Image (cartoon, rainbow over all chains, first blue to last red; front, side, top):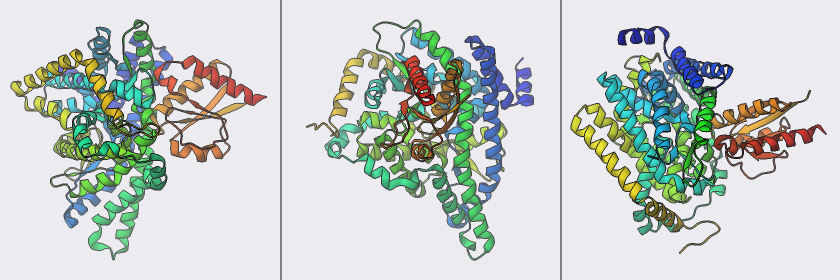
Length: 470
Length: 100
């Protein structure tokens, strides 16, 4: 039976199978058949589109990065392909496809039995964050149970994470009863909470940077296509540094610059098409669950983090971190990953931090720089596995020439620990991870009001524009 | 029949702006109005608005403070589901005003 499944996967591939699963889930949720079919088609288009773009891009960038590593000693062989590409890779793997269904059921049940007060299925899109770690476990161990266990535990941890920051996020961004749940964008908040008292001792809570004026000066860096051009140019330059007197080198440099810019411009459009596959499902899941949930419960609807992207402090601190993270990536010893496409995702990545710090950009930048640097090591560690999975689902990456990663999705030191526990296949580590979750869940639930109040008090300590705090 | 052009804005210019634009198109068609949509990022909004090609901006992400010359409406209720009907009512009203 398993062999039949395997051969079906091999023959048809992701652009066929993922749409089928999406159509089935949609029909189960009573989505009208025409919309269900369109949802499936969008998913197929998105997947195929991504593969088309990446397969055209990697032959251009791979040899140049290789030369860069050889000629300059800049040891950054892993290229950051971005969250959009990662999401599609994650959903194309067997664990990923399974988790589309399992995750939805799990999250709905957890909310209905009040294990969690965060309704996650309305942001179904972001499940790829768990799926990618599960896929790596599966690829390395060939054990579906371990892979599922990993994804489920990650889902549980990040639901807890989301619930911790829910009130802060909802308050700060001004959207009542909502929060973001994307694991890759809220993990940093944990570090932010822990580090906050230390930053306060250093006087950070009194620093007040003005987002609007800073934003005007940033201009060009904030545009993905120009950013892509500069980075591509830089990579091309470093790759051809030994031959700058030759005309071909300049040809190569400019081709890489334009190609990288093209990817930065086109990838998001493909992701946009792909995301349309999820609208009918999220709508249906939300409507059927909300019908039952009336009354005094303090609950939070999970929404997509794109909502907070444009908020001034979020956008500005995210953009400021772009040059900072590039420099850190270049000098950090042992780091092998060059953030490129996910640099423009930094405003997503800092949302948890911004909510906790109440918009204090100085804190966000410091916390971000530290935490994301640690994250780079996790990206480095997982690069080979991730590259293997991508190759497995049909991305043509010249063997041994290029490693890929995602600066946004894989840079998770804490969640990475859970992943490592499952990867090790050591029952002791796995048990520790599971037990740790239950202890934390219990502690949080017991002290929920106290924790929420503490976070609000800490946030209030930061000097804000219109209100002055002692 | 007049075709209305709506600009849908979100932070990344892709994910939620696409979701919103789809819903607006469908809902307005159900109400008898033909709509085409374009998605974009907040930084592109001003230029696109000034081109005169759009009748309305809907946004899930805050717009930089500026004079856009055309009505702007927050579309966050499309994501949360809270107040969605009122949002569509407002869109319909704005577009119908333009026919006069």
